[in-house]
Image (tube, rainbow, N blue to C red):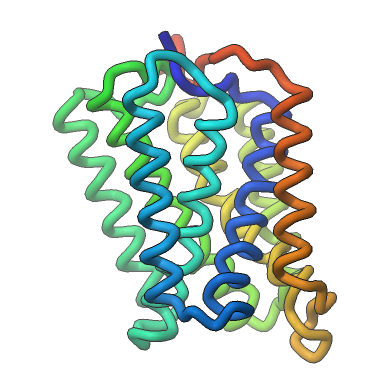
Length: 250
């Protein structure tokens, strides 16, 4: 049986909220609690390993477990990207290029090992491991992209959020009105929701002199987490297929 939720509007709403939580939660641990990016990465990566292992071992779809792994990838992605970009001094461009290369490598291994990177039927443990590793690095890449556009391009957090929202709207148009591979469009949207969430999270919590609303990272994270839980409770608890079924998958 499939162990992933059906991809619909509710899926993307929860995904964007989870990516926003990843930014506020990751920054809360590394900055507000002053644990640093390395310690924060260690905490969240351990959380990712525990939840991902439980997800792979599960025999059926459990919505709270699935979204716990997603949140783990977004929080770990935030601190991992910040550690590489800031602590190691790689920078946003260098970090984005390295993470993109890693992501393409993971997808290459996935295709070589399984024969496809289609996400329409995540059932076998081997495929599920590739799925979660890809999501981890896609969310890390998304963090670096969001920081680059918001901080280095001069667009700011609001401008960055609008750019990524516009890009997602174009992907939605391509999904409904073109025959472009649904698998490709899914991963494009999945990656771009991360920088959208990152810029929204920064917009909420950064100081006024940095263009943010200066809200508390901890309280913002709690509110977003409650919103995610409410959305999960109000949506279907049944598994579903990801885009790609019946389409040519790359």
